[in-house]
Image (tube, rainbow, N blue to C red; front, side, top):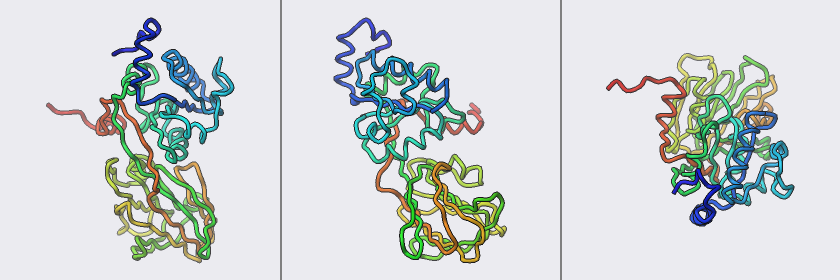
Length: 311
């Protein structure tokens, strides 16, 4: 059943919506981005014409025309009410939304209006056919785990947040070396003097971790990588451990610089000498939706310019 001619067949539309696994669809845009706003408007018009209940994240929804006030909601409410969330933007925009949406049982798909687009599958120039398949129930679904990041001071929790890609321990100044110890399940692993440490999920293994020399972890792996940043030793190498382990970083009292833990480069947690940073797999997972023809290895070949088949 194709709906690209949806405006001429109301009965077909009614049947399509009844059979669709998604009834309420949330739209999330990229603030202050004219191209993303145009794509968001096109999505809104398309979905409304098909008869879906549509919600718009209020920070970007106000850029659209003819949107009833009751359809403009905060991101948390969108997560609570929507069956499917469509994020328009780049991977950074997707990460920001995903950290919130992972708390709810809402499926998430992205329309790429960024640069690389590892997490945003749909083409903004012709998303309708692929989105129609997804809305009809023809899609692939992945569960991507997040990291919980917590900072403790003298045994007391000081701050916490989550990360889809990675948690990065670093100084707040460029190229300043710090000292810390790393433990896995309270088992001492190493002490290190370096610019910091990247603790990455498989989702984040193609992001900052990759630029730091870390390994690519395919999404189905239950693993996290520990990637040193410019370590002061030639023997230091990335380490991959089971994601059900708890990683603990203990900051040396000898550190004199201000320290931070960054979650997906969006959220910054302050850290002091002597603090401990606990990183572990979060309970909630992100429900990431892809079109039926999605291939993770095709994405890698395309984004990383890998060679094509020889024969």
